[in-house]
Amino acid sequence: MALSISTPPTSSSLLPASLQVGRWSSSAAMSARPVAFSLRRPVLAARVAAGGNAPSSSVDEVVTELDAVASFSEIVPDTVVFDDFEKFAPTAATVSSSLLLGIAGLPDTKFKSAIDTALADGECNTMEKPEDRMSCFLTKALANVGAEMAHLVPGRVSTEIDARLAYDTQGIIQRVHELLKLYSDHDVLSERLLFKIPATWQGIEASRLLESEGIQTHLTFVYSFAQAAAAAQAGASVVQIFVGRVRDWARTHSGDPEIDEALKKGEDAGLALVKKVYAYIHKNGYKTKLMAAAIRNKQDVFSLLGIDYIIAPLKILQSLEESVTDTDVKYGYVPRLTPALGKTYNFTEEELVKWDQLSLAAAMGPAAEELLASGLEGYVNQARRVEELFGKIWPPPNADIGNVSVVRARSVGQAGGSRPSSDDEVII
Image 1 (tube, one colour):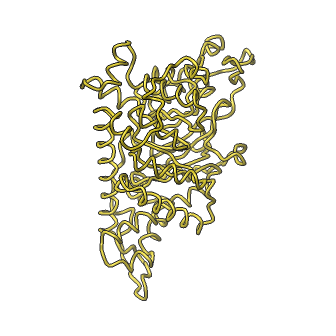
Image 2: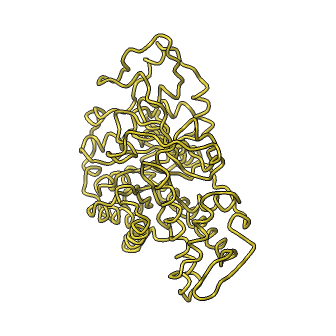
Image 3: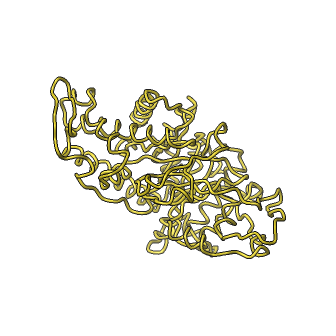
């Protein structure tokens, strides 16, 4: 999940243009909420100048490493529970199956009623097949929780699309339209929304068609240059690369041409992929913003400075926050990724093709194939766990379903649930 800490001047914010100024403040009573908020830190006195260096500032200015890196990239904490709302005012949020499980694990959360309302939905309850009914509940719950968040934060809400639709272009588009209608019923405008879609060819094609309608998409599970390039050509608003997962695969496997090439050059496979994709996007003038996830250490953060978004675990962000940087040292931080990088890359004819399903399949190596399959399996399992949970607690307490009033003592919060693992992403 995603908690955005800072919006640098060099990248596109997760906030809509009309909402990029202002903060939302919450009370201490709202702590321990299972949310995926994007959080904005106070604007730094020292910001990146045109040449990549920060302007002069007060000698007495206390700057942490987190302040310094946030001058170059938007920093996104990877977490589902965030207690310190007074320190970081939330501006945007992400909704997913893993978030619904997190909500179910906390009995006293504001969003429990949003799930109860979904389980009492008349349309869903008229469906004869249990699997259709539970899928309907899941979609309604995502929209209900997302709408609650949209009314709490000024920025965008990103909503996960069911991974079971990953190879069904029309199914993805239909689900996005269903969610848009549900959000519209809650008075949430489409410009406030992003939809997170797996980067299969069918998902990339769905992104292209949705973006042509003005619907913003975020492609996830990107593990190869071919996927990222095809997504950029499709006009995806955000592309997310899992740096650490690519690196992990490279440490225990071989035989992937793209990864082997990076290793021969003495480069980190995950970081090399991000750098190449960033150069490709800027060389060709695509609108796509790049997000790096599965960050393993502080050096990863420093190596990615300049990228649009960095999703990092809280332990890394806490370490950055606790490390005070001398003013002179702060000015030593420079972006590793800049638009000028595109001029230094010479892409092959094969890499500059107009990507289609066949060329994408041929270009994806074993790393991308295995990691994509693994990621999809994890998301499918999360969705099934949510539906199994809904099946156990349906109907919700005091629900009025049709003409029958049902009163039950058990609620979503009492049903239990588990916290999703780190590396479950997000934006936005």
